[in-house]
Length: 285
Image: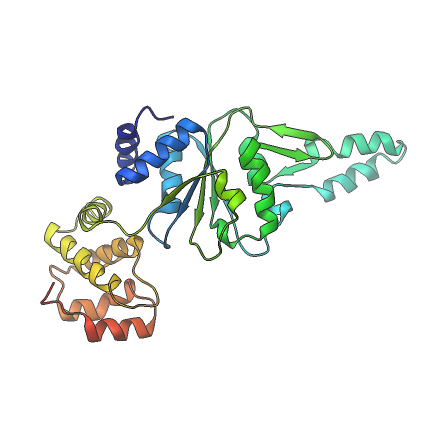
């Protein structure tokens, strides 16, 4: 899908995603080597947006598996449409069981979930397995077959093998350590908080009406907040939200009143707000 690392950077930038060189390189290698890309990092730094941007610039269909505690095979892989199967059985009362069984376990009654959807068909797809660290170990077992051989076994139908491999992105906030077997199947990328210059460019791109000096001030203050011992450091997404808030308020500078009134956009815990109010020195920034 990409011809070079520079091609990745340019096309992602065209979609509004400014990728650091390490990010662009990882995307290029994942595409060229046909390997899943495991992206770790704090929430709000652009892990999910990376998959969306890749899908956009390659005209691929985005297939998303949102992981959560308790997700099982029927939600991740496939399940049978039991209501429709019962209707079919009722309609064929004069048939033998062998005839009915062959029919009700056909494609018409199969409900494909994200993992199966991603490997069926020959159209380009981006498979996003979001917050993989929230899924149970049993789901990782499913991922090993899908990401290792890009195939899924449906006992009633046989093995479904991908005619065209999807571009796969797994994201993780590292709340649980993923298995080594899963990591071995992936290329690894860590996305942390961006450098100040890159974050300024991101803010100016996402909030084009914001004054350059005010954008720089926002990024500097957010950087100072991240250096504090907070329960939750501000993410890049929250930096952009704050910039949009200041634009909506008509603010021209970050003074104490503006910061006090709008800091809840970037800090989401009362003790963090109190700590920031006590330690943040705007004059020094």
